[in-house]
Image 1 (cartoon, helix red, strand yellow):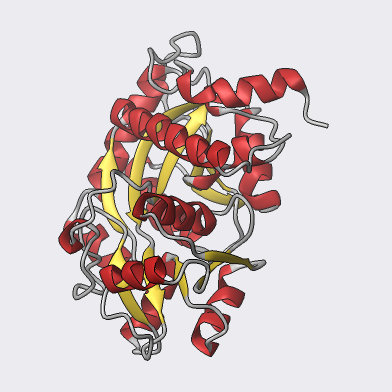
Image 2 (tube, helix red, strand yellow; image 1 turned 45 degrees about the vertical axis):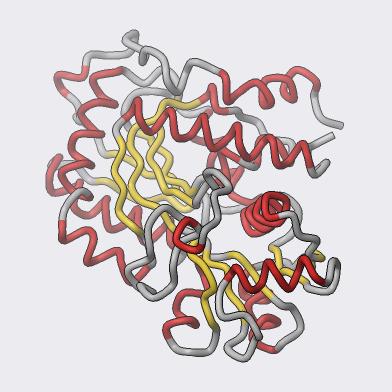
Length: 327
């Protein structure tokens, strides 16, 4: 049973001031920071996009700060184990979270977690991976408009793959279908690899995930639309929703960001954010991260805090509308 106090805190988290308000000043002065090694906690296994991104940044940050910056993979429970460890870490400027958005914008509302947004301070957004509506090459849909038209003509006939309850693939799909006014049946899978295999095999009609980009490039799948404000440089021929005439509001993408435990000194947060900006807001970063389909998009502490809060509010609304919230 979900602890009522923890549940209330989690649901109220997007409105908390910790992410967007004044940062803590009570910790040790940042004049000597960093005087110890820094740890980036990644709540996913090695070799995953957040891990590869964290290692790329850590390597360059180590040289800049002249201190070791290590990556500590703490995977499990959909990313919530490592995320909670950072939430409970001492806010001394040595431990930071590098995570995709779902651990903060989805997990606190779909499962029992030991943290909420108010347990973190936003440091920097690093980049974004946008979902792509993907079908088989022989599917009778030249674009997303055609898919929507077909689904409206035959409610319940088509299926979409998700990675299960509370996953980004599920919520993005349901959000798009609700806003487009179509009825598409969800087929849940344990992970993106299994769902993509069934999409290629013709056992499901469409999925919304960035993992399909390499298959689209190879011609084994077809992209109908990029769910973002701009096209993916890896698949530049796949248009955006707006370019296909859909004005359905903002659909949160899968961003990657750096956060600190609540209470981390403001000068430390500012200093780290500034150094990260010099690393990722460069042509080198764009070239290096493009093969991962990561679109470099730097935001500093306050702008990133707004993004986290707004995306969490949007996702919470979808979760509540679909009856997926933790009980």
